[in-house]
Image 1 (tube, rainbow, N blue to C red):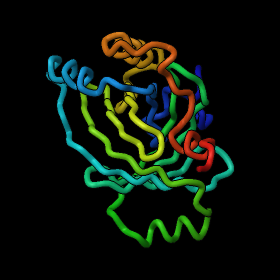
Image 2: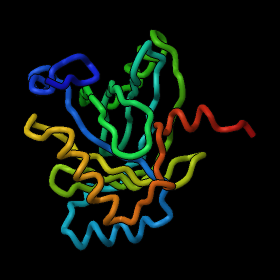
Image 3: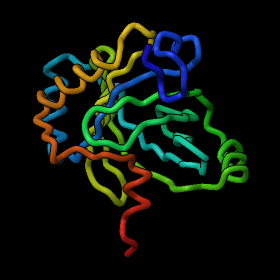
Length: 190
């Protein structure tokens, strides 16, 4: 039986608190066109969020505190760096905005990098879309096919990602193989 990145069999992910999603990230110069496609499909617009993700030093995976107007979470995830659809195993805890939480995490782990972005959030069924403007990096789109209840397996989630890639006209050259945090760390200094 396939295992998640946490060493938990996929069939036991729901009870472990680990969620699986398959996602892509791509450069985008066509937020208006993607927005029109989503509206045409009757996708649900959640809103615009100014999010600040503080990434902390950890021995493996990624740990970030997301602080926004809509989403506030402490998120630990493991995902390989590869372009195209890739599985992420995620443990997410919703939190209330609290500078003390950031201070404790910063003091105990050290801050790796801070990602500041403006994000539009959309849903079409179990698929979540982000239209992002990331400070210092530019415009991106993310597609996340989410297995929230343990009923979908990675191949079905990947198929959903590829469907929306085709629908939005995302080509392989647009795909990004790493997180915004990695891109910011690798960016040449001014």
